[in-house]
Image (tube, rainbow, N blue to C red; front, side, top):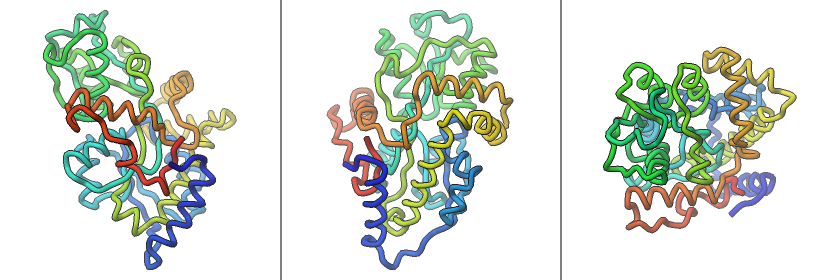
Length: 322
């Protein structure tokens, strides 16, 4: 597995030539993401011209749910997907999509929020929780958190409603939704609206590789040089975003991109700082990913309960890992 950003890019640049000498650089990219704080690297790379200086034009498209993200990538509507990497695993295992994860991002910054009158995990028995997709990513985190606290999967109902902002909206509109996993800025807005925070996912479940980027292997092979330049721009973007000197400028950028009040963005960034949620240079957290695979094996019974080696979902010649 590649270690170190510099070595990764040297190897990837070499691979770009070796894999397909006939490949043409694809300068225009359609990138599908969940709207939220997870996209700091992309927001900064666009705003600071890091894409442009590498001859890339990147269109960031917000997805309403993980199904559109996965299906759209598989159908070729989008070139690159960013989201909880458990979605990439689901694509491989459920849809037999041939893909690989090329970079990490963050731990998800997820916390379990409940209605104001709920003061303990015990009160979630017999209620309905809101999720994105019932069998991927943050839904599995929610199930595991409840299981650790003694609440079995058979003791509550699950309702798919979509991405973080849709889960928050559902909880605020309909109090029969007792709980949901939320990340900033949604978690900041939830707390301001009176919802109760029962704690972060990583404090209960442990290390977790959440958001990352992945592509179809066929696309990665045909556009290896483009992918390398995209990685370079995003690494430069996250370095700029995490530099305290740029905090005021970053707050303005994120507020504009997500159409949020600056104070909500500022508080969201403080949460990210406190949890140390963003990976240095967007490196892929191998231990966090092993936990992702363990959760899928344990909760869904995938692979007969025995998770595979992480390499199945990566490309050691390109993936930035630690």
